Amino acid sequence: MVGELDKWMLMATARAPTNIAVIKYWGKRDETLILPINDSISFTIDPDHLSATTTVAVSPSFQEDRMWLNGKEISLSGGRYQNCLRELRNRAGDFEDKTRGMQIRKEDWKKLHFHIASYNNFPTAAGLASSAAGFACLVFSLAKLMNVNEEIGQLSAIARQGSGSACRSLFGGFVKWTMGNQANGSDSIAVQLVDETHWDELVIIVAVVSSRQKETSSTSGMRESVETSSLLQHRAQAIVPNRILQMEESIKNRDFSSFARLTCADSNQFHAVCLDTSPPIFYMNDTSHRIINIVEKWNQHEGIPQVAYTFDAGPNAVMIARNRKTATLLLQRLLFYFPPSPDHDLNSYVLGDKTILQEAG
Ligand code: DP6
Figure 1 (cartoon, protein in one colour):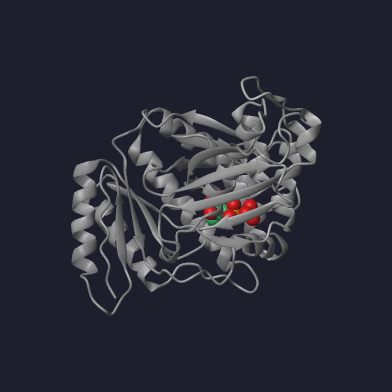
Figure 2 (cartoon, rainbow, N blue to C red):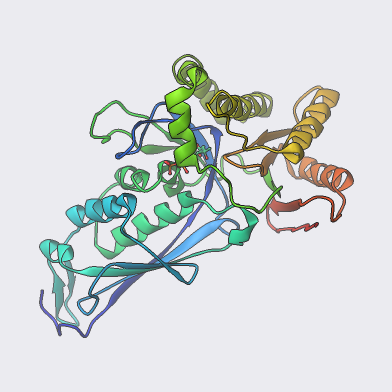
């Protein structure tokens, strides 16, 4: 390493959005490498709404790797952070800045330390915090800083080792995470199915049903499901493979009826697996169930689906409206059934070209 030692600092900044699965990942076959038991498909949210922005810096004056999340220092000692850092350091490239007479060789990255600052652009208290955007952003910004010369697919395999769902956040649009079959996980990567312009009339509405932190994390919930649920095995082997093919078709053809049917069915089956876990895991609450009823009745009444819903490991509803007109009607319905009141705790976000936050209670 040449240059004026101790006097320099290099920085890189990146932004990565979160993603919402329409065919869920639930269950690992390898806990350390984070290899899933089935393929999954998600869409990436517009980064203006739910995303993480991460700045990474490197300097010979840094004595250790450190990270701050929303301004608060967090520990990097966990295996997931260490695995991502190790994988990236192993793939780092040479860096040279001739004007400043600075050069960092591949091997030097192993001796240098990083300072990492990450922010989410949505309130953590909204219960929407997701490790997906965070790890995708961490891996992407460090890869830029260290001149890692890899395809995005290969970077997704590193982000996967931070949090499974993070691998899907490295692409926009609709993204498939292929489970792969290699023991070292080299083929368990994300691939973009279509970009964000392919189906741009869809509008996403997130109803924040509860801002409390979930009791059972995705990581421990899916571990318990793998250990105790027989429905999980059936789902992974007999249901998801076919559903993935159908979902790919409906996305390619922008077939909203088929898309909505598959999305709702997969969310409901994922929560059925949670109930089939021992002890059962309840991620949805009464408000979540009411939202499902409202959407199902409306879709039935119209004859063709207007809105799809999906719930991750928590009670918040993510709804996907066929188009802007339907999204407006959906918002009206939500406000009708959940008027601002201290009796419930429902906030609605519209994720389109503007964000509306309706806060109650
Ligand atoms: C219900 O990716 O958070 O959102 O890999 O253990 O970090 P780890 O789990 P995580 O699980 C996400 C589960 C899900 C479904 C999905 O996003 O596919």
